Length: 194
Image (cartoon, rainbow, N blue to C red; front, side, top):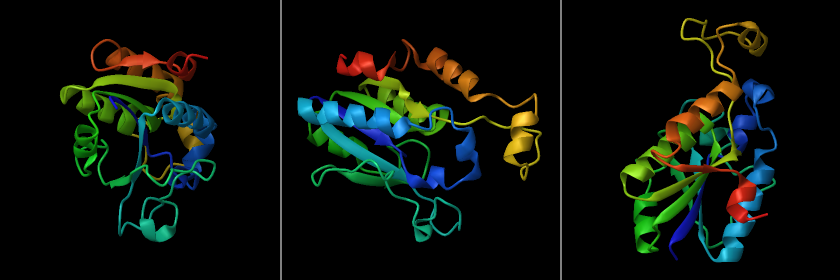
């Protein structure tokens, strides 16, 4: 087995946040499911990664019950389910060990957030020598507030602020930064050949 699909942070924690209403790809689980089905059919390794922030009381605190794979997806019994506490999927997990033991040399990454957890995982994977495919339409993110915006602003205020970076701009910048340098950027249809 030389290929693996790494599914990053496709978890209910995001749906439980008010910002989910601004997500650019609310049907991300459907696209991720297509990648998972194709990887399983090809005999590739599928590895699931969740983000947790224990003790914070927010939606990423496991005590709240939201740190679980989105309800419409289901890891198979033999598919690892890792939990990370930083942005990239390598630093606080045994992901690299799992990939090495399985003989994986190329990975496809997908998940939430396009520019943060998925992108940083792609960059780290590239630095570790993996060939990386970034499944752009199997990622999702939301607009980012301007650094000077109040931390407690509402979703409405975020969207009304002309300084807010849109999710479309974030995705475009991510593609620009990764393409040909850290990853090959493809759509799900391109990856699965449909």
